[in-house]
Image (cartoon, rainbow, N blue to C red; front, side):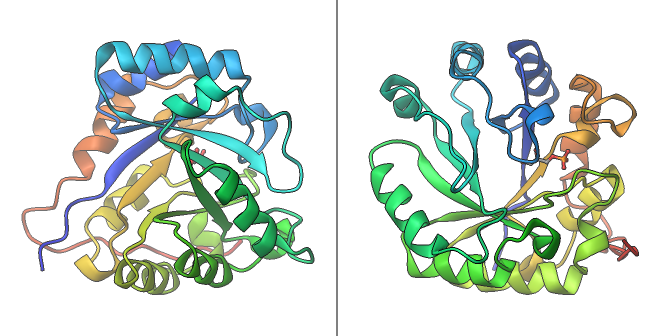
Length: 252
Ligand SMILES: O=C[C@H](O)COP(=O)(O)O
């Protein structure tokens, strides 16, 4: 079975950053405000301005961060919801709550707007979030067709500090069998992006999502750099040798 290479998602905070991400070849433009946390929601006017920039150029997919379930702000205006493709919602501090029901209600409310994407955190214990396997179970039992695995703490640790490739691969395989596209993020650096993109087909994610790696000095508070995006995008093409550099688990 031929499995396509992963698509590149780049998180941006402004129209200028969206232009840089598009110029570099990002395939999904994701709007979020990094100063407001892992899934910091941008202001509606910022999302609208970014949508205008993207829609003027082409029809690439646009997603936006909603924030954490249970801590959501004012609902976005209807016109904005109609124009977005996906809305991501995190589950920090939701572990001990009835998050399944809350997520189900939210997904139902958004049935005619952007598709809701639950975000599982690899560092779920410190985020007080449900374990990724539980979030995937929920997605499989619902009509969810996309799930993002990210890290909650943006503190210099990355996905590899919290989960091994085997663990990530197990989630990817389970999701794929259920028809769910699996997106992977978590302060991934260029070498990890290349490893994931060239992993064996059954454990290769459908989407690789970055912000920090697309910014100068790998610092997610810096602006998006088109040349860095282009290099990441190029690294998603399969290596000619068909082999892949190992994804090393690091100590947190
Ligand atoms: O949606 C994915 C995130 O924006 C990834 O951000 P990060 O690479 O800085 O962890």
